[in-house]
Length: 472
Ligand SMILES: Cc1ncc(COP(=O)(O)O)c(C=O)c1O
Image (tube, rainbow, N blue to C red; front, side, top):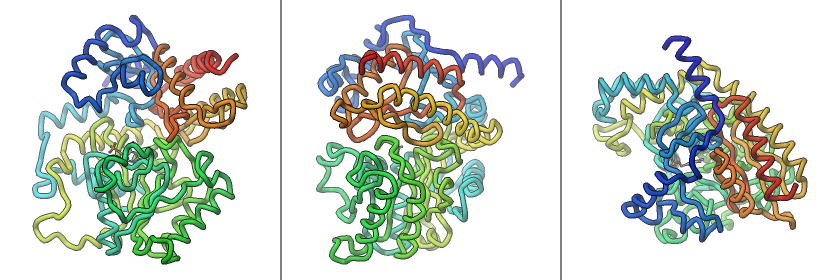
């Protein structure tokens, strides 16, 4: 691509919001009406359902196209994406390298035969994943969703230890398919209807942090470690046969809950001491999101199995569980028919796009950029928190994975005000989502290619919106 075209792309990707209709506009509303007729009603984010839950009468917008940090809806409105579309668009929407790789690959080979007849692209990606992940993480199981990677990791732990028990954490989100849902403890409503079919060998320990029962800081970390040790060493804890511990280095959907420095390293030590497979779920935090390639690197921790997904494919649904050879050896040698595989495992189009996304991160210095912009955004959020010290908690998270907790006058979680802020930001052309088990955290996970001007304009808009909600 010529330099002129590249500059033009950068300019487009760095534009601010431009709204030409009410939000949502007529085209979005009509399409959502159609969708509501044909999609399972529990899934469509309809106006009526949102109104019931949040008091805010607002249909979703329908996306048409996206580039860099900008998204256009079907009415022609342009938004700045502060959500990274569930923290997926780290390299930016329709990153030119990823688009080019998809074009090239789709004219050549879209589908191969996973574990039976793999493609060159699958092999290259496995090698690259081994290169960029820390320590001796080397053996890869590819999957198509975060949940799929989590389930591959949980199976790995059983194969390696023969023990069915798992320690997971309260507030965690690891996906919603049955295996992943049994370790997820984000909202009770997600689990309740399926409780009878969930793995009964999972125990959820409290996660250290402001929102949980243990609190944050050194005391929270210490209390959490006592809990984990107790579960592991006391047969009366009800947790006999623990073979795995699964943890997010920062809880993403749980509200950007960031454990105290040193905690993850101590957890690593406990896993070593008790022969437990440590699974670190980097599906949200991985591929540069926290200002390092992987969040566990902030702590110098090498997991036994790391799960990645989201930003990995530059927008293509692809994920992986990557393990140490000593742990993956638990699977044994293949006897001709893989006991863990799927039709689309190692899909060449996805592998080519993932490789291009990794190359974009490397070539454009996006990990460093994410760290730098993260500091800038965090400083801006900190200024907002100081403006309303009683109603806004300190910003949390790392890199461009940040959360701003909104509190009630009594100091509790204020999900209503957070949802109102999200909704009013949408009306101003900014996309973001609430996070946290109480929905009270404004979650920010923009593409790493977002511009400083876009961040500053978003902070100014948020300042005005919060003034309207919390009082000037
Ligand atoms: C940390 C983490 N793990 C797993 C998942 C599940 O990923 P998916 O929705 O692709 O199954 C998510 C999704 O938000 C996540 O944040």
